[in-house]
Figure 1 (spheres, each protein chain N blue to C red):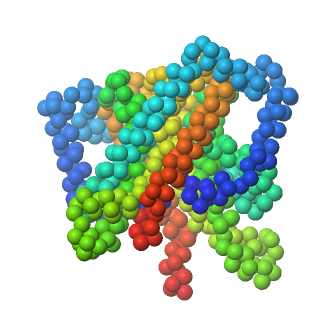
Figure 2 (spheres, one colour; figure 1 turned 45 degrees about the vertical axis):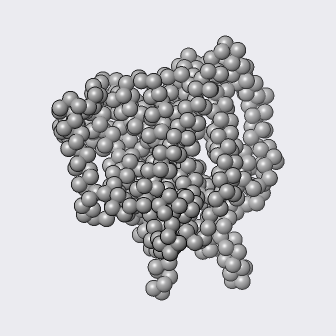
Figure 3 (cartoon, chains in turn brown, red; figure 1 turned 135 degrees about the vertical axis):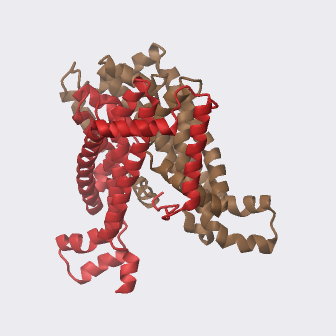
Length: 264
Length: 261
């Protein structure tokens, strides 16, 4: 995961002139590239390829299916991961008992979950969603649990002094303290969820951008493959930017405090 | 996620018991037929399948293929990512005129390159390596760049005061100061390489552990698939642990060492 400092640093740099090499490369490809090449179709044909997909009505259903899966999966993973993370983090016994299991789930490379879910669950409704949630939930859960666990010794005395009830403790102390680490988890989960959504679609041929791009590749419609690649790139960019905006809003509402900062 | 959140203490009794209990409940559920999944194998069946895979040498061959691809791809991406990170970290010109072009490519999910690589190189090791290297360069690059750029201004003053040449500033000041970040980049790159190798083997290069898992799916052999999946998990954790140990050896605890000296 790129660290926060690094990505802030990069996004702050003046963008437009830095895009020049890429633009020049594409222009040179367009001007000098072999026309009609099955391997390196000129960039102008990429657009035509995607436009054809759009006109024949295959692009939009695929795009919306992929986006809906992604958004729902991230939302569910946030709720599940946040809630389970706080529950596990609050109890030292639970952390110890579940530690090895969670370590394994964190270490397991996410793509192998896809065939397991396909075989065990079968092609049920919502298979894509179940798989993406089961992958995206771990970074969120583990980060939240770690931050909540680091907190309990620290602010336990405060809650006792103030005689806060369980609900008030949760709302006033635990949740605000866990949010920065929770967001770090979501930041890790977003690109993972995009990759796994595409992977599920590629492996199972369930409708989506992933299966569309594989179909184009199998039929050697290379312009479509490149066009869809750009589209997926834009999608990744848009979803990551959306996350940054949401993150900013959440952090403005619950700013991180130094007093409980060791979790993040 | 950079730090180990729940340190595995040796002899974690409740943790071990949890795993045993899960296996026992799983076994009982499958045997009694309470688990409504047709293709859920019992842990004992998975164990038998695993031993079979070990005995036939299939597991070893697949592991060797995957490990080789991962290591080649990872070493390549470490070299490229480090070189790019140093270049962009040291040259304001490069940052100004080239960085944004790379930044546009970074959020592009690497898996979307797989169909393009397939188009160009068909089902081959090249396809697998391209996907691995493309994806694993980023963590190395970003961490190296971040490490170099955020070297404290104080250290720049030191190298000015000592009148170090540019080359010596790089080797004596900048790289040591950025080393922890670079090593983190290497470690994240290895994790990415493992993930991408498995994805590439599932879809782009029919060899190795990724392909073994998918072909067990196609052959409807759940016990083999689970054996492979559990093994892949252990393998990935072991690889990561190797790097954690290696990086501790390489950079023996900055703070601890400094305090002792």
